Length: 569
View 1 (cartoon, rainbow, N blue to C red):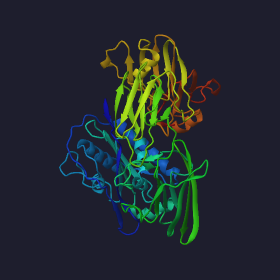
View 2: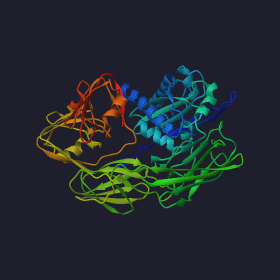
View 3: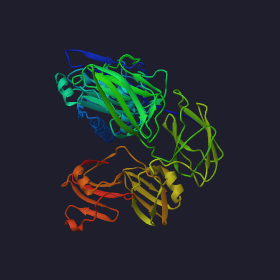
View 4: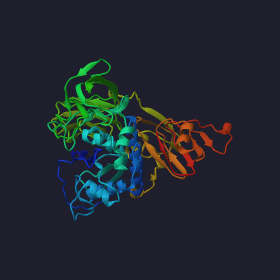
């Protein structure tokens, strides 16, 4: 069986107001727009669109404010312009910042003209686009890994943003997310600079969930490489800084003070695309950084001849599943119906996986790309030997076994919960497909699963069943024929927001929010009832009658509110 990857790709365009007269700096993508009209077969629903806009703004502002910058305000004209371009790209199986006159969904041939068409009052805007991402969070994480796009989001002038996404099974990359950054009043550019810090560094100081890797960007800051470590950057505020001369920019393993010397420095003189200003610097480690590892950055520079330095640290994110580091020809033991990550470290800066083939004496595994050097795999079957051949010349074997030697980087051991005969209200922080649940619980044992707007009934014909998997964030009712244990591996999240609607909501909390933290987000008077885990809170109760103190896993919870709210974990 052959499977080819659908990679995320990212493009960068910006027209940035410089704050003096009519001076503008333009940055356009190097790749041409392709045009081939297609028929859409899927799109984000209105609720999904609203969620993408709301959650994208929350997460983007979290990233900006964590680096000391002012947050963005939402702008409905930029939202619409962003959505229009995403729709155009999906309708025409296109990539790029341009649009072809007369093509389906055309609203303007440049980012600026599309913003003007939706009522935006001026042309000082920036545009970032990503394709093929799992979510708006993944889209933003990948764009922040791409240096030109990162600088666009961390621009000192911009103070508002629009977000729009669309999807189509007919498009090569299935979905696209478009972001338009702007400034409410161009004459206030200096005011925004004054509100923003003297220096912005990325990853920000003490960040604990940085990606370890950068792949591709258009235009490409590393045209001779397809994979490198996550770039570290410094941006000086032109209104608050003088002449900057960077004398050293170094990266260290924080635990043993070992310097990573295989790096490449980009600045105004070395940037191959000529986009860096004299206030922007980026250090690219030429090898991937390690997962779940703390690094320290030390930079020395002169400002107007005065010696200064900046020291900060960050940590790369841990892997959320048990994982193996895979060498060529190795055989690894894997358990039935358990998700693993298989990391194949690149041998050089062009060693990436874009496809693979599988030879199996047993079941065919469920296999997807976690990144271009890491595969996510699940095998459902009692026995068998699976051989995987990657298109970059690597081969390894997976043997189904009762035991494994995988690493659990978050010190997250498998958790086991007891499910009783008849009905159970649960919430688990992991994804478990219907097939995986049938393997773990027994096909004949599962009578009904209901939650997240989906249902499975054993007695139904298959076309009547909409349930496909347990999803984090949702609570589920599960009816079983007999008592049984469910074993699963918890996952961790950078951020997760769920939409609560007026009335009753069945949810699965992804962290142990206390009652006071819940009230802060939802509103003391807006929160009416929380019930689950054999505990209850009712606004109408005397305090001594309320037993609920905080959310706990693996319970599902009913929560009743008066008005719609979002709840962020």
